[in-house]
Image (cartoon, rainbow, N blue to C red; front, side, top):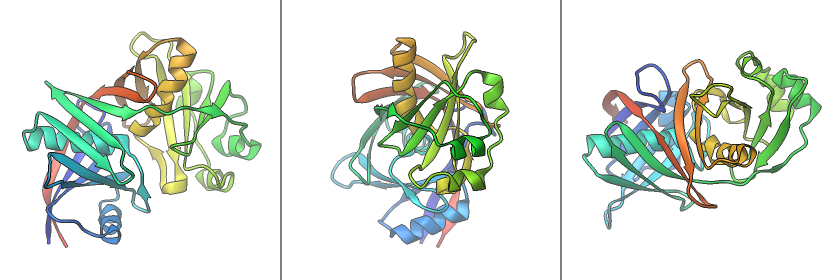
Length: 269
């Protein structure tokens, strides 16, 4: 079998930055074990698998890290949207996840506009072992996103965020509940409203370069805190990435950013 396969950098306007995702364009359905093996071979934080629905213009999408399947991945959604909108010359793309989540995207110039889910957050008490593994002694607030299984921790400033150097082995030991951890801080600059970094050692990704799905609950948190429905953010990983957001209603978040196709080829299995 031959599978058209792409590597696409998401949430960036230039190569070698943003979050790289694998995207495999399927002609027929393949089993989950094969998808996981492909994701492990590509060894990117996530690989998306697209299969066109023969009855309409929607695409079924599934996401795999090198070690497990995930329910929703923002940067792989942006990468997949870039592929369909640009390479397949579509004006709009409709994606449906394994769990029935419906996603959509369209393109104006280089900017891709997507509709993501908007998630609520609830109060959460952070364990001292987790804070020690993360390497911080003080934090401003903490929340938990039930849908994502991720903890959000707000800290005081950008410098502290940049200097975080977690002990990932101890971080995994500190919780059996979490799938991920996002640390965030308010921006003091005009370009962005807030910054973040995201750590997912529980699913085999120590630090994710730009985590699109995290903004489904970061938007809720910062909208409530800043009393704004339009937000701009930058993820402060080594590669870095940006996006703009607009809360449409209690369940939908509009996300705008860019992506760059940097590699295309054929996978032989």
